Image (cartoon, rainbow over all chains, first blue to last red):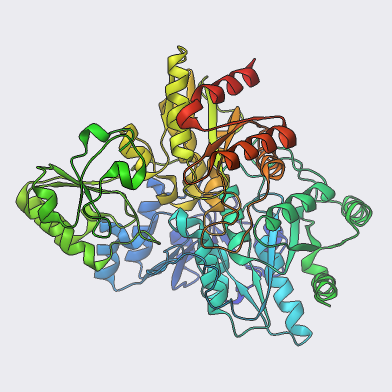
Length: 320
Length: 320
């Protein structure tokens, strides 16, 4: 909604039908929230985007009916699920019969490789910035996009390297690193950066968290595959535990130490700044966290949605 | 050869034909090394095991001919490649026609899950020991197997949880964690431990190295998925850099710190001991490293092939 809102005609959410997206999500783009596909079709969509993923990323059986109905109504389907719709016999056959397209955002590229070895030609020249986070769903993609926008406003040719399904949908390309065969995660990340080698800055969208019991491995692979020149730590102010897990999120100094430590195992990188997600937090809480970051780490902390330029400034300072 | 040598009739290696395995590898089991399949067939095998994997894990075209010829000769094929032989139309058809079996050791289980969340019933009771390493191919599987043997000799019901193709071949089961969809690495590790929940000790075979640019993510996922009670660091004495990469291997104190740090992000774990691979090293070099480990870390270092019991002793001390 924030980055491709012009193309959205309605949101399908049976639990919030009747509200609008500005009420529900606090975004500027105002679109109706509808209860079912039939109500959605009145807004004349041409595509159904499956924008959320259930735990584990499979296709719940209730959604199969919905997907098939959307195909019958002539909609293309764009899916971010782990389950590949185009590999599902029933769904593929129905889509072919109706002449609609199935786009699986997480489908890995056909050719994957390992990171280049010592002695191979070095990586293409751009500066690499990686957004990392204190948990899933804290704003790593948003921070990456806002850093790209703010950098461009200063004349830096910046691009985002999308590593997750929503980032791929917004950027129009990328690799869902969490969906590749595990051995190829770091190589896929490097490959993605190589493909964007004409840019000045490649801002790599991070995933998960080094502290996350389920996804930490994906994060370390992206970190070592990207070999960033700078990292930006993303944190949702007011969140104190990894969602769903009994793992506390440490304060800024320790978050910084963890990321610089992990980077250094392969290639040293500094944290340039903290990007704060202020959703649901009161201003005093955010200000207190900004102060704490400055006091504990000497780094700038800013909300990328309102102060992306401050993050770019901090990154530039590190590069100079 | 070391663990299932009784079942081996010959080794196919065109670069070492004519020598014997005791000369070539320093193992007790002596088997002929042959130059080609035809010579191998004279030793009346019933199975061709593809025991090595080229970089990237694909099937080199030269091997296709060999695999097809082995099928035609009536051999089952056991493969540790990333490329699944049973999914290859030509190979599968030929195997079906000849009535032989194709076993892909790295094939992921049909059902994978994420690690259990807070509030779910906790893990089954066994103690979990994880072998970690300073590089690939330093002896993590061997250390795990020898710890299991030495523990059993003391009456501890220990089993290995195999996470790689060779370990799976030896143990007769397991999950190749480097071959699963990246999001499920930690969950697959936990699942593997759960399946062995009747044992006293589950010794998890580690993979790669936290310092390895290509595979570090797999390692962190296994570490966080296993939540070990103790770690054993495996190191090949005399190796100073990650094979193929320009990353130095640090000394014992730093290796220990890195692993205890990474474990602590999710669940603290101590390094109980160092398992040394002495292949190709002179005794003085090994002794010097044992001393260095004791001096820098206070831990025991021992060659699992000759002193597995010393490693078990160190683990038991940590558990008491």
